[in-house]
Image 1: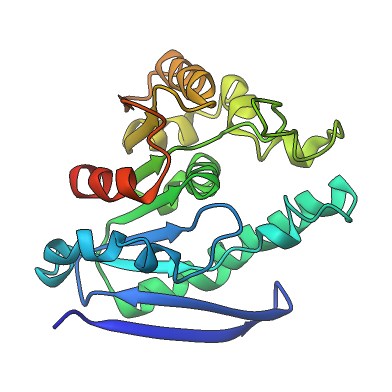
Image 2 (image 1 turned 180 degrees about the vertical axis):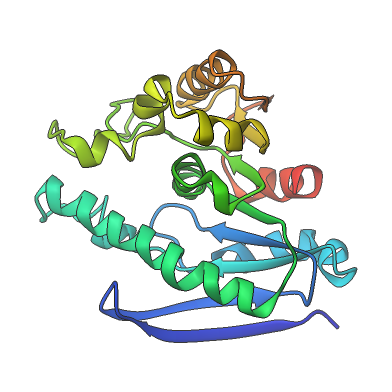
Amino acid sequence: MMNREYHKWWSDGLQRDMELLVFGHAGAKVLVFPSRIGRFYEYENLGMVASLRHKIEQGWIQLYCIDSVDAESFYCEWAHPSGRIKRHIDFEEYILNEVLPFMHSKNPHDCVISHGLSLGAFHAANIVFRYPQFFQKLVAFSGRYDLTLNVEFFNDLFDGFYNEDIYFHTPSHFLPNLECSWRLGKLREMDITLVIGKEDPFLQNNEQLSSTLWQKSINHQLVVWDDRAHSGYYWRRMAVLYI
């Protein structure tokens, strides 16, 4: 029987209740970010947990599926863009100061994997590139790593506004200029897998990020799947292969 736990607590940093689900009892800890405006139960509802059931039951991995605040940050259209990125920073602090300590209190395994789907892939990658000391592996599916781009029907999420906060939370922007030898060293030790569909509108963005990583001597794999590959059908198959 697979262990499944529901947790909810008041986050002082976000000033609201936050919920999450835990699947499994042991193994590498997987921090799971849902897709755009997704909820903590999305990963289970998409059949992702079921696709990983064997690895979870064997005690190889333990999933921590968290909620998003995308509707209060990047997709809060009534808020000024400077407020949107500030809310995202609050969310990052929630991960660093509340979720990661919670994960470590439950499971002493020394491997932490950051994993996300679609916009969740952005969250997963952004926090790894900013705080690589807390993670050993990144697995990002169908990600967009520059939220200022206008591609297909996806718009610049900051409406043309730009500041230092946005720069430092846009991997496509800050990574090319990253010179910190300590942080680069941590990233070079990381197991990084980026997966994208060849018809996905952000294929070029993924290729650019991959090029930047190679320029920084950061080993990784960029895997390009057929079709758009941007749905649960594809993500379930990817999960079995890469997590």
